[in-house]
Image (cartoon, rainbow, N blue to C red; front, side, top):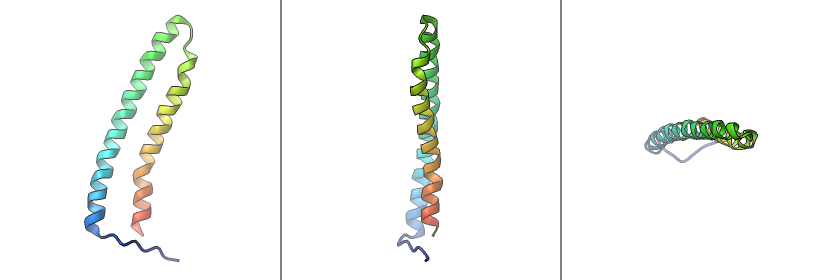
Length: 80
């Protein structure tokens, strides 16, 4: 079975541009999130409870993985 999408190159060109911008925004937000959580972990480590921030770090890293794979997944489905 062959998939056929009713989109032309003018639609996918704009979509590629938006996905490119979103990839940069996700990367910047991920780096900022890791830096913020890392600084909060360093402050909490001084008071003796540094392990409660690991779930936040895992959430940020999971969101980074999800954001990084969104572009290739959309490109795969639109390539036909």
